[in-house]
Amino acid sequence: MAANSFFSASSIGLKDYSLLTIANANLLMVHGSPLQRHVFSVPQFEGRFFGTMNLSEPQAGSSISDISTRAVPDGPDHEQDPLGPRYRLNGRKMCISGGDHGMGKT
Image (cartoon, rainbow, N blue to C red):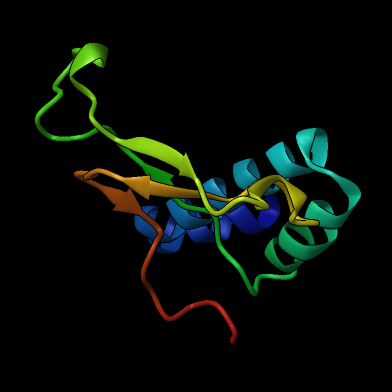
């Protein structure tokens, strides 16, 4: 909380990145497998990875039935990946927050 107050004072946008990351990492800690927690959450807690937020498709507006994004299995062994099932996503998003910036370490 103390660090977030510094982020808020410096830049609301910067604070948003930290909130998205906290939410993303905590979601994985509650619902992810032990390997997913280690591979994805730990780097977020370390500040090397950041969480993102994807908003709905522009043509859909508030109509859920107009969403055209689809997830299809990524190959015949898509469920065998140790990090969880793999899918190919097709569609269009109108906003991705926290998806492209240079703050994370590589």
